[in-house]
Length: 284
Image (cartoon, rainbow, N blue to C red):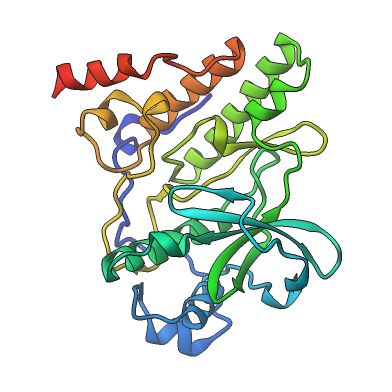
């Protein structure tokens, strides 16, 4: 794989540099706001992101088809299953309301969702979960993507008899999409098995951009991004011991190696989490 040279492998902060912007669809949204913050309503945020090229599809969601409760619950988000008006099954990812504590927590979650939408909208690859668009769902801004019925790659491999060659090929595909992101100045920030979904035809697809960093952005966020979403077993040592707080290409490559190891051997890296914990204690 061809990675950028070493002077481009540092932390991915929200740079003040600009890049060519998409033609705004709403002049008011583009001119009123130059950054994402908690003072914006859901409608304002959707309008703002639409002006930056993110597709809005609220009117295409068949709300009556959505599950009453989330199908998947994560630390900062929850996923509902629904259908579009054309019958397509989709996943609706929303921030977790019950994790919104004070105003600061609300701001961080709101900005995290907007960041994920923006970064995800800049990517397209055969091994990347496609972003269909954003929508207002039950009063929240949400991310809409195709429903992956085979679940995560770990779930898929647990009930299929995939050969070692097939698993190696899957590793190659995830490496290819990681290269695609890095070539576009994007650090994923949390590559691991649960972020890799499998399509109906068995194709592995990387998703989960909640912790991603983009080197160049045409606007700012009021809060500073931190790498709070990494998972210990897949995290690079510099993240574990606190030497680096932002997503980096180096950390992505390390996590990719852990994923490849896990897929090849069909085990999670560091079967005993105490190994990682003891390492961190020795280095701290």
